[in-house]
Image (tube, rainbow, N blue to C red):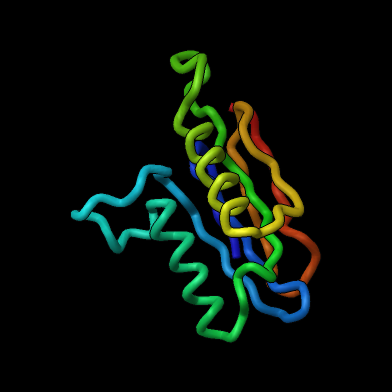
Length: 132
């Protein structure tokens, strides 16, 4: 699986006992509106979709390990304080903590784009950061 991240955040959830995993690409930390209730671009929908997909394969989401990447400030000259990337990262860490899911590794924030690549069942996801 691969994705390119700016202010967006990717979550990788994997069951360490099985060769099973899911990845999402979150664009918006705000809850989905009624007009976009099925869009996995929204954090709440993306995370619930991941949990549902894992459960469909008899994987308990709370037993998974998480990796979190992205949340960069793509416009550092315009936005000096809290930005969309910060909001996305904060939401993801809060949600995973509330759900009891351990984050094993993360690479978030800063002024970089990230290219994320991961093969299910192999070593942890690999990230290449490119400065803005």
